Length: 72
Image (tube, rainbow, N blue to C red; front, side, top):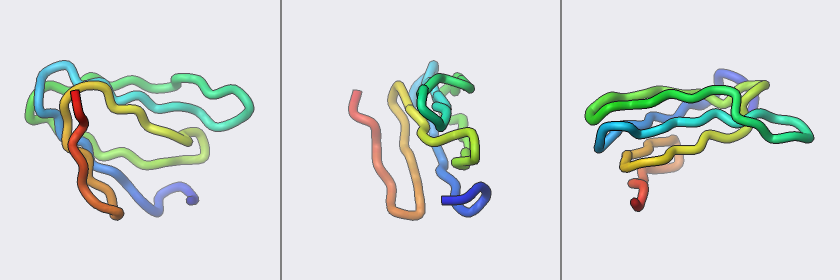
């Protein structure tokens, strides 16, 4: 997937939801961290630097492939 083609939406269902961007390459590392409070929404994209996004906490995640809730 190339940069800018797709996005995901993350909506926090509680305070303190962490959204963590992970890098591409031979060593996977954290490169970005956002903390969301209840009701806040973040729209994120995969880029040439971001190969994965980790969500920690209660949240709803929407993608072009569907919607899911985290199970905490």
